[in-house]
Image 1 (cartoon, rainbow, N blue to C red):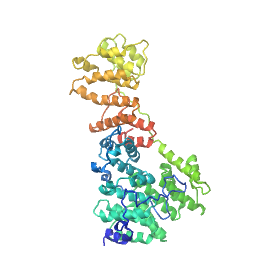
Image 2 (image 1 turned 60 degrees about the vertical axis):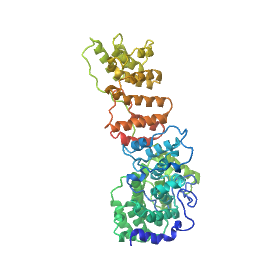
Image 3 (image 1 turned 30 degrees about the vertical axis):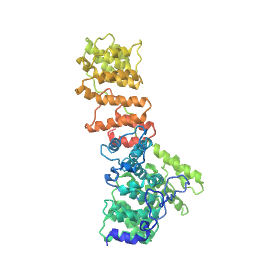
Image 4 (image 1 turned 135 degrees about the vertical axis):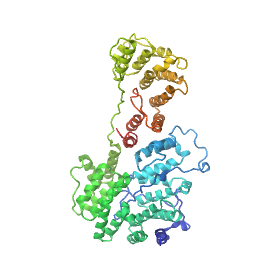
Length: 581
């Protein structure tokens, strides 16, 4: 008997969709959520960890899990899309968040993925492209924000579940994490019957095992795991979730020797690469170790995980283990846990603390995690080396020395070197110095200087002053002198179409446009333009920006994210796009 057939036959009585009370995912009618939280009380997003149960970890799924699905226009609400504002094109952010690939990957960059999804949704993107809702739900699951994920998934339109079976699987995982075992079992059963040839059917099989085990139905869990073994399925020895389930099952059935054997198998496995699965693996090892009597070793593993990421599920497990151990006189926390965090952790597990105190402790720990930096450093522009001429006997030499001084931010010296030097190139460098962080001793008329520049469409000499003018344009933009920057921008617009100089300036003009949008307090538009430049540079095999660019688009994205409190998102972006910094 195959595993799927055996499982369906075993669980047939719990499949409500064969009866009159069929539940339709996304309708919010039959499958009502029953969110159970940790002791901290109402409002906490941490799922309750039932003794003997486990939160089903997300399979390290192929990237197709969140691949785009075609959405029928007639299925969408009428009169949508008008006045939704500016938001990033879906293809753009998917490629940026996936390091040039064509999908958003919450398993790799969950914080960045969630940020981009919420950004687009807040601007109205969901009205025309419900895929953003799928993407957001996936990121919420990876970040263990199961209550938020449940609310989002249950309010999705029913047609999305019909078009994308993986949404039902995702909803089942969320039900399981929230302790809604009946609803999870119903959805897993439906998936196994209706999607028996789907590439994720093994994930549904594993989810069913996790569900019956978490619900305390030990005999059924043992039977399902036995069916896996009989069918020649080797996953139990290779899958951390199933190995942990087997160890927990043996422990609950009183077979301590078997439980110890499965703990050894689990501990010897290679650490999963996906960080959400790695967290679950460590939690399973810690919980089994403590259950088998080695309190100190298990808590060392768990406290190391808490120091790295005090997520809701980890905090919930810690609170449960501490409460269960308080009556047994087990050891407390290690002394090297930072003092302030230690105090909050003690309060969280203190049975004498009231609900408000525990909830406050949980919120403080989670907020601390969200704001923790990931070693970001302030970016500095890298200036190209400059050739130094031996003397100042010519106008060319004076301009070269002035250019070198400008690149070293010695603007006063550059200004002095350019005094009374004739020529268009000297005029362009004077504009660059004026646009920098420098106030000349005498009043000057930058607008008149710009007006006297040669016409690039007619005078070839104009092509020799492109670099200092570009530096001036960016400098005026940074100083919020957008009028002067706009005049220089019009100079570049008159460069011959198709010329190499014109092509080389396209990215600089894009950078200036992004800077101007940011200064005009349009951060969404600016961020989108920066992201477009990031992706454009990737498509060209890696963009090397000129010496006069003090902040690259990648650095601007990181800065904007950090300035808005998105430290984790900035860290994930930097890991993808700036790995050497």
